[in-house]
Amino acid sequence: MAPVADSPEILPITPKTAKSSPGVDYFDAATTTPEMVIDSLVRNGGCFVKNLLSTQEVDTIVSDIRPYIDADVAWTGDFFPKETRRVCSLAEKSPTFIHRVLANPLYLEVCDKMLSSEIESWTGDVYEKSISPPQVNATIAFSIGPGARAQGLHRDSIAHHNRHPAITAAEYKMGRDSAIDIFVAGKKATKANGTTRFIPGSHLEHYLEKPDESRAIYAEMDPGDAFIMLASCYHGGSANTTENEERLMLAGFMTKGYLRQEENMYLGVSQEAVKQYPRHIQDILGYGLSAPFLGWVDLKHPRKVLYPDEDLDDDMY
Image 1 (tube, rainbow, N blue to C red):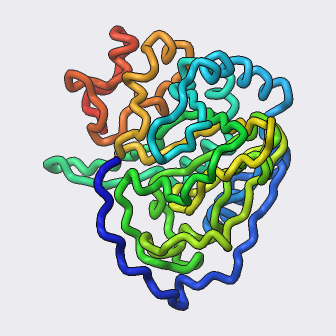
Image 2: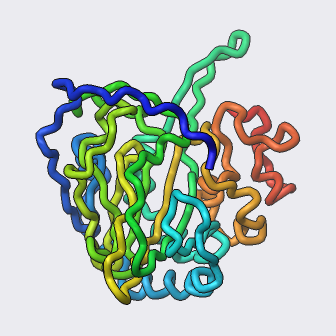
């Protein structure tokens, strides 16, 4: 563990940071829209989407990752309990997870609207407009065994060094968040077996507001249900107090295209695996360009690494 910095002064609760117990919305995948999910995320920080995956799709993903779970060893650090088993680089290991969770059209459209960035610039006398679409931040499956302690509540957005002031939902602007998470239950997820807990509304608070466990709710889900959450929300895995139940969670994370990915896709996923996916998935895995200029190889579009003969615009705006 790195040395721990001196504890900051605990911030007083101000009118902007005091919350009136925001609700958490439940939607059904067959009827919800990206706009409904975005509105809910702005107000509450997280929402549920039931029936995102079919039973067969869940079973396929679990079958894909089970050998890797069984082969993993106990975590030796403090961030996860030692009963945790993890599977990363899921683009290499479960195409069904990539197609149906990470590249789920509902999730991707929410990420596109909330994480995309646009900038205008001049190059000499030429006016340019460039768009940086979202990219994958990480992909992880978590298996939490009986006896696991609760994970400390934390914000995933600390990876991007975000220092946000407190605001109200009415003041929220697109671009404030640097990442959006999606958690899909691989098995029934309950408070008892350690499902994710999170603090609604914590995305609106000052970045150093200390998490209050009494405000946390538990993301209990049936297999195939999803929980979508802004990365600035306080959350963490809960204690698995059961004797024989595994908490199995399938997680995808998207971030802004111009930020460094939390999981290094270029080393974790082979080019052979990347080539099996359609272009829009290759782009979000990191083989697209964050315009202008970010991601080139030999001053060429990164897709040239996969397909050397493909004709692409070398100006990269």
